[in-house]
Image (cartoon, rainbow, N blue to C red):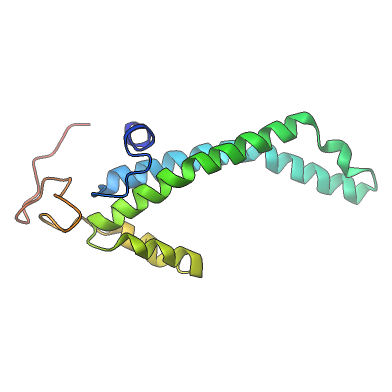
Length: 147
């Protein structure tokens, strides 16, 4: 949770530097959980609309104010987390030694390539995007940290 909050508070639109795997994956996990929880009420409404349409009743009756509020909250959250999600992915690609422009592969259907690149370990030492956030300089990992 700390990594998620760190990305939101301190690195909201930071596209420079590097992000460790832990920072990237914890942000992605927490963001996914929140998105899933916000989508549950919307899924229920869509299911309800489909069932009402099959039953021959007016499906617009299910579009209540609550549905619109949940839809608005979901949309606001998705828009608010788009930039930090993009930023942490770009910094993760930098940490693995790749250009952040590779993120654009997502838009031509090559999301799996970006996912695989984000799984790769940090490149030892500094690279053109900054020092290694793990503290690895010569291929020897830094001492373990207690979380």
